[in-house]
Length: 329
Image (tube, rainbow, N blue to C red; front, side, top):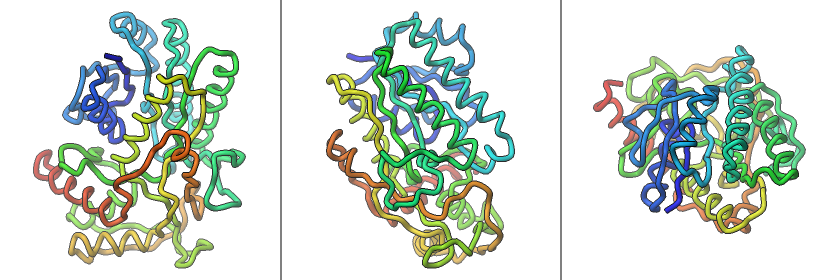
């Protein structure tokens, strides 16, 4: 049985991967400072509380367990916050990851899966965007992720690590069985915010920008169900254990929906015609981001099973109702 260390494994995406790892028979160690994650979301393995910048605790943890691979989620992820507080993002997302990689090198752990983002592409000139597109991030969140991608490439070139970088497009949805989902009370993603507005937790939903060069003036994004994203991590893990070379893969569906299309679907599913306010653009938002997903299908044999916007929103809505009832909003 292989043992996997999952940093940030108590968070939204990490907890779904931890659950799937446990179901697949892996031994799982979750390392999370619980600043945005939740211990109740850890459905498999052992939970250890700690921060990736705590070198001593990381070393102690890796000496205690025989870790075969690391999946790294422990990052701040809110684009507007990164614009307003870039140092917070560079200290955690860049310095923290460098610290983690250094400790892994000392402990001779050389299998690594990195949680990256479509934000590394910035405003791509060709849509859908493929992995070989030059990186040109337009916000500190994306820049920090791009920095680590370069570090991983350099480490792989020097034969110090084998890695898979997964570039997420817009992650949404929840465990279809309703056990886990987005738990952050201050989540900012569109689908979560729309559903919380429908549930009466927010007075209105803000739409940031209606003058983008898109068919309805609002941003277009490629939404991927969190369960499909979790399965991509297991495929990446199998790939590395089978001797696969270091590589980068987009994680999306290759189809985009506008902000207004998502809002319309959310209103239909919840039965609530909630209030929408239209305001100006946010810094750091590209007009369109849609993935070219051919590579991950060809090399990792990954195939999505939840590729439907209404299904994504329905699972998120079912989870949101559970979250409100169980955790008092």
